[in-house]
Image (tube, rainbow, N blue to C red; front, side, top):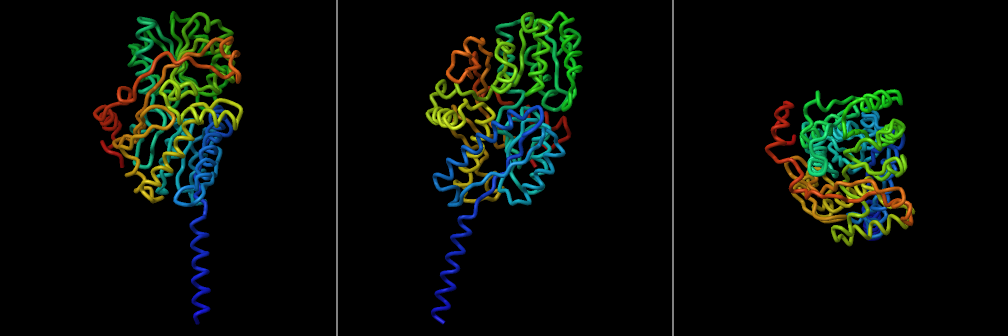
Length: 415
């Protein structure tokens, strides 16, 4: 009997160790194909680096992490199906995005499974605005924050100019255009006209038509509210029409992959915003950020982009919340995240409690000349940081957020 008891105790101990070592699955819902695939690949790289680093330190709650990923192709319906599959695999949390429509749809489906969803690149105001809910946390800034930073710079350096907008016809495009119109005083669409192009699936003819109208206008500022490969295609047409020399081109949300795809010769001088670039850590005196740049560059032989930094930060922020709450439960993690301030790859950031928006500094960037880019060892020194706006100034107020929610028929608190 004693021998049986000892055997059972040993088996129970072995089982407990095996259970403790069972990997925790993180689900990445990202665009591996489609117009935003380069931003998606960067997210994968950033996430894998973070997971490997955490596993080298013993994992989370004594368990290793593993990544399971699904391709959204930047299509909301596919992203929702991915959420169901990842939930069925037992994912503890989900993250990803490049299209705001995808992040919004996937976040709502994740909530039905009781899972947190962290938005990586999802700049639409709606993500944490009228479509926000308790299970969605957005790591990047929103469209208003980009517009407030960019609008201030444009109003100071290019005052009283006429604008022309070419905008992707979905939630990110709509809220980005409306926000920038407000902050630049270009709300009069008679004086500052615009054209919508389909998303996804815009054809070259759509961009040609829109930019031909821009060329026929009297505008001095051309705002391309486009992202990923869509911006690349439009920029090539803009160059053929001579618009890159005649107008100041603005792309509200830039990434280094867009410049890389189009080429710095075409993109030179374009203005936009970024929540992070690999030049930010020394600017903000962030030793951790500089270490990330070094490690990422050595591993992948390229500089990390804001897409990579976002995914990397999300994995670490989720892991930190788990360690502080000692739980994988979504409700416990929500409490641990809300109003939590931290510094990771830049200066101070905070997960706001009332909307789950990450309040952080936004940087106005301008694409460098081709000669400057080519002089860099990795040929990827794309951006000059020409201005910055502190997160406490950039993020919308509680009153403004509640007004937006009420106007959309939504409750003034996250549900």
